[in-house]
Image (cartoon, rainbow, N blue to C red; front, side, top):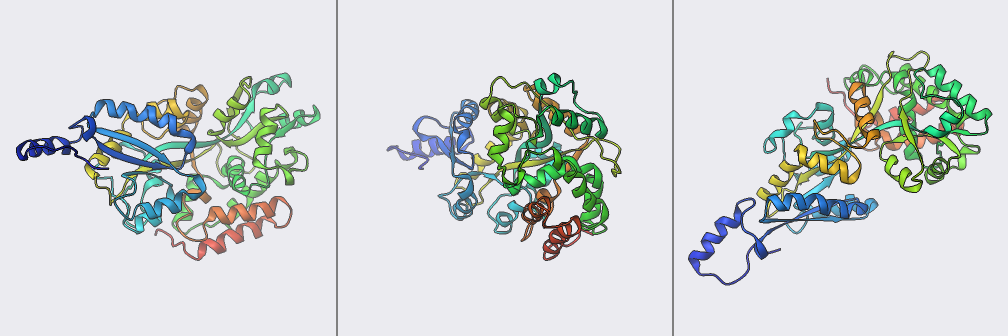
Amino acid sequence: MPRRRGVLGAAALLAFALTACAPGGGGGSDAVNLKVWGWRQEDVAAYKKIFQIYEKAHPGVKVEYLPYKNTEYDTILKTGLTDSSGPDVAQLRSYGLLQPLVGAGSLVPLDGPVDKLSGFPKQILDGARGEKDGHVYGVPFALQTLHVIYNKKIFADNGIAAPTSWADMIAGFDKLSKAGVTPLANTVTDGWMLPIEQEIFGATTYGGPDYLTKMLNGSAKFTDAPWTKSLETWKSTQKYWPAQASGVSYTDAQALFTAGRAAAFPGGVWEIAGFQKANPQLDLGIFNAPPAPGAAVDKTLVPGYVDGSFGVSAKSPHKDAALDLVRWMATEEFGRVLSTELRQISAVPGVEPQDELLAQALKDYQANPSPYVTYAYFSGGTPTAWDLASEAFSDYVLGRRNPADTAAHIQRGVDQWFRPKN
């Protein structure tokens, strides 16, 4: 869109241009128009409210959130970033899925221009970091944490409290089963959920962040005993899954839980808003799977990962204004309004969610953070560990693979491209 319209004298045009080029300068029909692309079509109204706050403080800037279909977004964005008609600011996938855009030179490094990024935790910035050059290419916007979400009424009606030990958890599941209640609304047919379930119940078995460090430096693998045993830990909960779980889809599992036919749902905090919208009467709680027998650590671990970030297109004709916008996205003001409007955990340090469950999820994660290994740290090449795990885990829970075969499938695929850091 044009920056300037109208017929002005030469002197007036020069004076106006100097004003309009300054971030926040100008106004009216001569505003700088920033296009922000994203993949969440359901968030249009929320982002309109969010960006109105920025526009009010920067009267020379207009910000428009333009979402595309989630499944088509990556291809559309890759093309859009090749010229100036694409986005000025783009919602970016995290970790390995970000790397093709970094490699193509499509994004502006932000760890210099956005000084507040220096205050973000390393594990948060890892979600927006170029794997080869180490630069940060986006301002992380949301943190997703993984828990067991449970129905407080069903637990209370059956005399069950949120467990503090693995034995307590299993005893509670047994009690629910005897009462005719499905303890866990797990899915099998939607393979992308299986690595999430494995992290929730198996992280303590393999050791979480300490084991990840060993994997990244080449001293541990998926095929080693700790990680292979974590599969067994996760699958040991299978008897508490829905009847005929092999045919239960993700949406089926959600429906079982929101209808009160299942007591708990292992998944991410993004589920909470949807659950309560589907059934406003639900009284929800979250707990984290306690250390399993033989666990590598003696504390509960909370898996989490960066959902995405906002980066600046290297081809943007409004690069300075775009950089100003992402600088604001690194502030607590942006983090607070995003958390409130989208009911998400903001990735901005110091932002406490107003929502009670999100606040608990963040507190638990900060106390004992653990990585989402297959998705976050082994997705920088093809095939990704996450794709391999989604496929192999499905075979595993259906009895077509044993733990060793499952782990070997992932390791063979990753070995095609992964090189240890040291």
